[in-house]
Length: 281
Image (cartoon, rainbow, N blue to C red; front, side, top):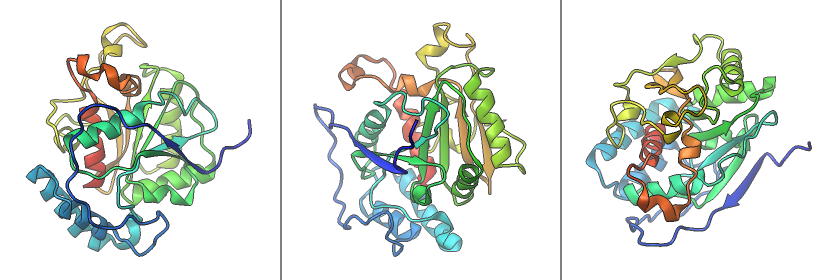
């Protein structure tokens, strides 16, 4: 199979129906390769845009202060949140194609974070990887990275990025789970591998409040290993989670048609909102 372009964009139509209006965002958008924008500048723009909840505003303010000390280590961020999906050649990286549209829709509904309507597909060895605070990957099959891709992921995480790896198999002993864990041990040899994330961690209270990872329908209908997992696993670097592995199959849960959202008793994309906000604060 031939290689895809390093970074491509997929545009999703905006869901119909009432939408929450974003507060004014006065700054002009900047290109991903504009080296003049700093993390502090970006977050200042988000604060100026008027984040609805004071708790998030305070978190963003703290992030802006920390960015001064980090300098360029965090990479550049565009003026809007862009959903980035990781492409890897060994597996079905493009599964659950509606995840991006539904997560962006929830960010618009629940927050005032400006969002970009196009999904960016990017590889782990791309120099542009550091331009995104949050990168999503998923699949059922083998996960295998080459040395350059592992190095790229390490740089991404060390500079403050968050990689969310969602296992569509819902099986901690499955191929995706085992091969992803092996790759993370190679990419982060100083880390003890994927470890359980405490239920009191900031990812469960960065925007909405959860007492742990929300369950999915796939956990209770016998799919995968037929076990309800009340934890996610991750790798922490520099006091922050840089890698999160979820066995709950959130990708399939978030891959619904927007027309069916009003019939859902619980909106699990709220957890995605938490993860995005955590990655930006």
